[in-house]
Image (cartoon, rainbow, N blue to C red; front, side, top):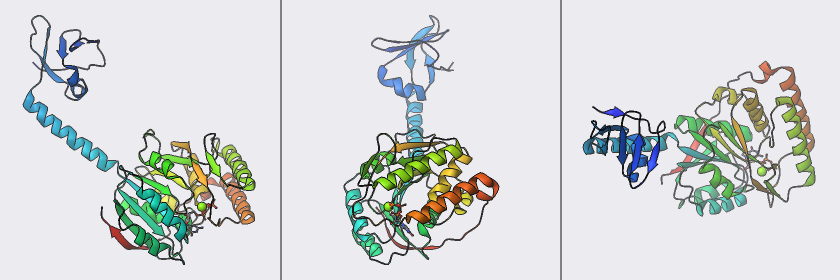
Length: 336
Ligand SMILES: Nc1nc2c(ncn2[C@@H]2O[C@H](COP(=O)(O)OP(=O)(O)OP(=O)(O)O)[C@@H](O)[C@H]2O)c(=O)[nH]1
Ligand SMILES: [Mg+2]
């Protein structure tokens, strides 16, 4: 009679062979089988009369089960598929540099790179087409039908990723402020899978900021503090350019109602906190070299204050779903 045993419950003694002791029987097997044994736990004791025996594995079933496991691992990798989204707008110099850096990385567990051009008026689009020809990854280059802002580009990318059954979307700004080592870490994400959002943080203890002005650091830290107060969560960055968004449980209609401009990320972080999503901040390196910041300080502060007030006064209205339409064209696709 075959018996299913659970090796977690009983003693394991390791000599030449591994012996599993159950209350009724004792089984032994070669240590090589240990890992597989957990998966193929249907075993038959050879000698039941003295309540002990050598592990007897049915080779045919063993092979079939092995194939099933390989198939499951394959399906698991398909289900865990990842897409990298790079928003770009008028950053032809920086995007060329960034693609060069990406080429030097392996980024094995990445299935596709999606560039979303927000109707750049310089040669950003042409530069991407040219530079990605020999990139050994599936590449898709999209151009929005209108300039939808950074938030609008996020919505386009999320739509694309969901339509193509991706499980994780990694956002990495195309203006080459981030560090590709951080990107690599987030993509190969050994970080636990039970987080729905993994957010790059520029203001944690191990974060590195290069050439960031004092006023920007102070302003960011101040608003991190205010947002932490109103959400009762410790927030160390309200919107960096490197984030991982898990798509399984994402309410895309909610996300579509966020503004299209640079304040999109503040809405996202408030959504994460309000709807109690699991999130994790990871320290990143962020640099400013030749980028031209589009953030207008005074306007930005006014917008931040209005977001905080709206969130505090009327959450129902704040998270009211609105259906906006975003359209785009696929300019080029390179298969691997
Ligand atoms: N400003 C702006 N950036 C866009 C737009 N669409 C895509 N992007 C890209 O979004 C990324 C972030 O834009 P930035 O202007 O740097 O805004 P930010 O990162 O919030 O601000 P900084 O802290 O100054 O870098 C860049 O890679 C842009 O190329 C857009 O419509 N406007
Ligand atoms: Mg930037």
